[in-house]
Length: 248
Image (cartoon, rainbow, N blue to C red; front, side, top):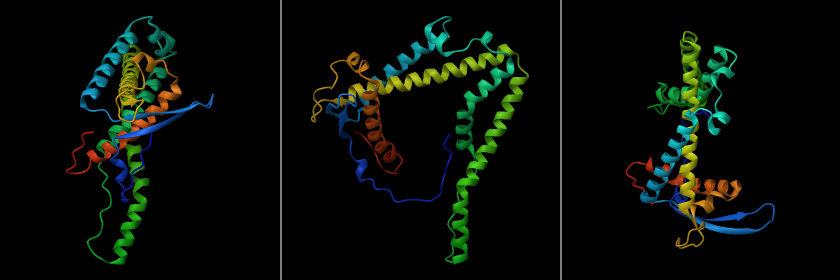
């Protein structure tokens, strides 16, 4: 996980951020055939459709994962009798929770960035620059320390529980993660279908139906997703600026 943080500030060119649509060139690497489509950021109504679709698909997936002997559960979730002992399950749970540990540590860490000196003394600014240079390394070390405390706390807690209790935690972590991934994938699938057009005036969808979109090659989906997310980056940045309202 990337836990780098730097207090240095860089100028940002925001001119490219005010582009809510783009032309996307697509090339089939096997046949060499090329074409292009046009993509635009979705408005609130279409985003609502994408979210509703994503939640439905995630809910269906979660239900399947909880159903004994379902294809999804058999292929993606280890049953209790497949583990050698409780220690193996504990290690699996800890591994699954590492991302949550880091997110919680970054969110709650009290490690302030160096503050610029009030004076114009060169030595004060030299010390400030030294603190700025050292900050990323010290910040990473602080986060690692916090994560280690959380990991040791949970390991001790799990060691005192029954193997059935620890397995329930494992089961919940796996299902939650898979359902979240399904929700994200489904959300972007619907977004890409709704956001991709064959003409620059955005009147004709590139895919005649959502089924047509679902059946295209994964490489094409990846290209479309990468380009759509590049449009999203602009709005995400602008939403953080004071006094800015973004409505594509």
